[in-house]
Image 1 (cartoon, rainbow, N blue to C red):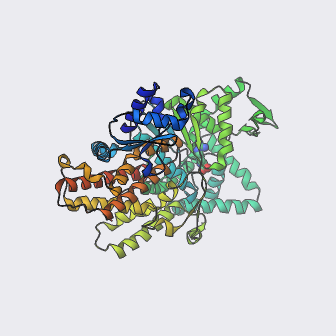
Image 2 (spheres, helix red, strand yellow):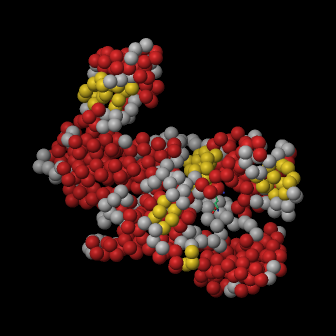
Length: 564
Ligand code: ARG
């Protein structure tokens, strides 16, 4: 960071350009032989009326001394800058060790609010493997924005409204009992729901009775509301276990039902603005001009829809949180839905809709079929996490029989392995989850990163500390050490880029880069050197690596055990 600014300032002074703009142009060369920073001279070719290689040749020797740079070389149309390894190691490590857990963070977001709508489970339905991505990506983005100084609001937009709840209540009244549902939870509710559909095929009158029950919920009939709230409480208690395993908390559980009394003003506003059209008895917003199907606002029977609730929710969130950004972490299957919602908000004149983003992602499937047979065709996320924990515990018992508190470590690694499967890939990619890959300690996996972190902790523990005042930074100029310094220095940029692109994997990759550089450094160098300055330098570097791996893992949603 600092050397880039020094370079930009010096070039700016020589060619009479803006240093901030020049800084943006600086690149990282494709390999270390070409230095640490490169300046592409073709950017100046137009104003200087000279060929890029001519500019490089004449400008390079004219730059003189630059703080933190040991060598400057023209190469074709580029000027390559070689960082002074000793001073680069010093500035990088001092910063990491001073900032600790805050390293990679900043205050760019101070005073700004980001609302994140993620996980958003459905009441009385399973919290299944399909919710893994929204949950893991949403949680990671939340932590990343927190790290950058934003105020974040995490929202679980519960799916807790719709005619299916009339069916659920009727099925419960006909065939259910309190104890079975209390004990069986969502699984028992699902069975009731399945039974309802089977029986309704034979007896259509059940559908009318179910509709009547939903009407009773809408009219706040005490009995209907009580059963409905009870279904909700059971579901939330059950998913709460999964959230606890993942270390996830929500600021708001305002779901679809929350907007029940907040939709009428939106409908009125749509009507006032002449956006509402009646079509076959239903009320719609015509979007044909924008090559989209109409956005359905009211059904012909007057019932509101998913889209109606989302319009009310967006407006409510703007009024309540005055967000600078509202992120919807939802599968790509709902792309059209969000395009429609955003367009309708735009037509309503809500200029803040430009701050709403659909952060979409691909599908997760399992290679291992065994899990999917346990409870019918749905794979419960809780089962996946517990299976990962069990498998990890077996491995720990076999490989590290003396480890204390094996259960906690197994949870940290097992859950981490599953989460990593999502946060190590670009969002849009479909993911096929495989146990072998996820629990592999050698591949580019969560457990591998956690293991490297534990190794750093072990080195530091055995050394019993080091003296920061007595570090010989020149001991870090060998290839492996300087590569690790560089990997550590690149971490803050990875955090910013991850936030900008809504892509946690950019941080995961940066963590893996630090891990593999650390492991190479660890094999190449004897950390406990007799020379105090050298030893302290290597321990400080180990400490910095430990810190970055831990912070990076936290940001993408993983814990970092100190012993494995
Ligand atoms: N409950 C929905 C589902 O499971 C996701 C809700 C996403 N958020 C929203 N504001 N529409 O598909």
